[in-house]
Structures are given as structure tokens and as C-alpha cells.
Image (cartoon, rainbow, N blue to C red):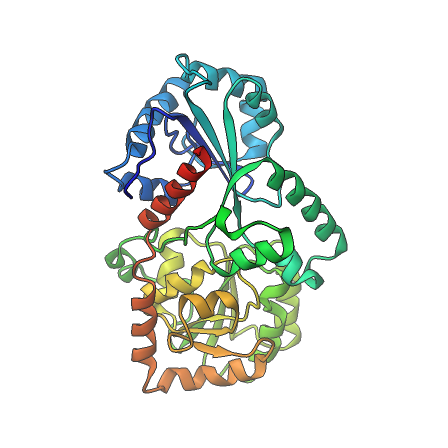
Length: 390
């Protein structure tokens, strides 16, 4: 990196992950999701690893659970004043004139927690924030005017507080400039990684026959049932292919599950479309590996983690074109279709099974995402932290 994150400048890092406090590794006083922690642990040329190890000791001393917990659960156990006192006890030798505490706010369209304001009265605390996506600006029709207004108001507050910005996708840099007026020089690009997945040997030996009918090909759609993902349209368009193949839906479907189940019944596709919901890690990736393809009719992704996961498993991706998949896999690394062309997408599924270029397409995708590791994510994130300290 040339320059490393100096412990003489920084007392600790707090990372809030997507509205959740994830007390899995407290680096000096840090909170990191599992995958990013794994990335940091590989950076042996940076003091960040010593922060994490020190944080592990603090974690044990404070007897705080290492399991991921939603903020609503955590705040019942760690009230703001208790959290504040724990932070102070962790940094008894903290000197605000010489050291900084960084707060990495995961979602720039959500306001930082109130206890952060109290901490800022006692610490030299700088907020950096992640730009996850800008769907409310790119596709406001899916979220509505109330969500747009709320997020826009939150953006204005968060942007005013932030000393630095990070995003996973280069196209979001331009969007942030156009919609939010953030200079591209202030934004660091830190793509996400694929190496949070289990070892390939584990995935390969995980049996999915109890979950899906493997007597014929099946295509997997792993996604929450948000409007821009296209679940209902996909179900409607799949009718007629049930004798040849199956469609399997996994992921958190929430209140939409009953609507999707009704759509499957109404179209008489109970035997060809299965809703499995959330799966454990091994089953999830085994379903992806053994599928005939990842079908993904989403018109917008902030990054597109399923694309790179499928690519690393050499599972073909059949998707609508969007900035994310175009950037990650390219037109030669996936079967891409115009947005909204559900009919053409479904018609291409049988073709993808016998396509002579299938192997070269999955090879291209595999090679394009090889460098996208969580260590790379961590290094880019450290670059942003350094910039925020200036």
C-alpha cells in the first residue's frame, strides 16, 4: 500500500454493517462483518491486524456476544450510555489531540445512530460512509416518493458529516456526483469479494437432492423479492418449461412469499417452481453449484454479489443487462438480455444447456472476478480510512 494505517493516528474503528451492529471483531475498538474481517486478517503489512487482535481481547473482557445481532437486539443489551462507557474503558489512554476514532457507516441513506453524537463529544471521531446503491434516484418508481424524500434527507445529513466515502461499484461514483453532488475524488472504490464462500470441496460434496428435484435441470434465482428483481414476471414467463426444467427460488422473500406462492398456483406450476427461502451456507452454494444456471432478472444492483459467486462456481449467469453485471462479467461472461425481456430470457434457458460456448462463457466470468477478494476490499477500505485522516 505504500502507506499503512498508523496506530499512532487511529485509536479504533467502528464499522456498522447495513443497519446492524456486528460485534465479530473489535479492531482496537472495531466492529466488522465476517467477510471484511477475513480480508483485514490477510493484510500482514498493516497494523490493522494488531487492532483486530487487540479488539478480540477487548471483546472477551467486555463479555459481548460474537454472534451477529440486529441493532434492535443489541441496543437492549448495550444501551448507549453503557456502550459509551465500554468504549471509554477500552481507550483509557486515548488522546483526542493525537488519535482518531473512525466510524464506518454502512449505508449513507440511513442516519447514523444517536449514540454516535454522544461519542463525538468526547472523541476525535470521524465518520466515513458507504454508498451502497442509488436505486431511489435511478429507479424511483420501485420505492415511491416517500422513500425517495426520506433517503434524500438522510443523504444530506450523512454527506455533511462524512470525511470520506467508499462504494463497491465504479458506476456509483458517477451517480453519486450527478445525484448527490459528491466529488469523485472523495470516493474510494472497494469492490466486494467472493472468498467468503466455503471451500469448493465442501460445496461439491454437499447433497442437494433432499432440497430439489435433480432428475431434470433446474435454474436458481437467489434474491429477496423486491419489485425490481422481477419475481412475479419470472414466474409468469416460466410457464411452459416445466416439463424440461425447474425453477428454484431461494433467499428472504418476506411478506411477498404468499404472493409468489399464489402466482405459482394460479399458473399451475407447483411441480416446476419451488420456493425454498433462506438456506444454510453450504446448501445455498451447493444449490448454486449444481444448478444449470443462475437466472437473475434484476434491473438494478448496487454491486451484484450473486454474479461473482456464480462466476467462481462456473455456474452460467442468465441476466438482464445492467451496469453491475456489465462491469463484473461483461457481455462475453454471461447470457445477457435487454431489461424487461422476460420472454427472451426464459426462451434462452434451454439454449444455454446445449450451447457450445457455455464453457468459454463460464471461463470468462471466472477469470474476470478472480481478483475480487475480501483482502482487496480491505486494502481499498484502508485507503479510504487514510484519506479520511488527512
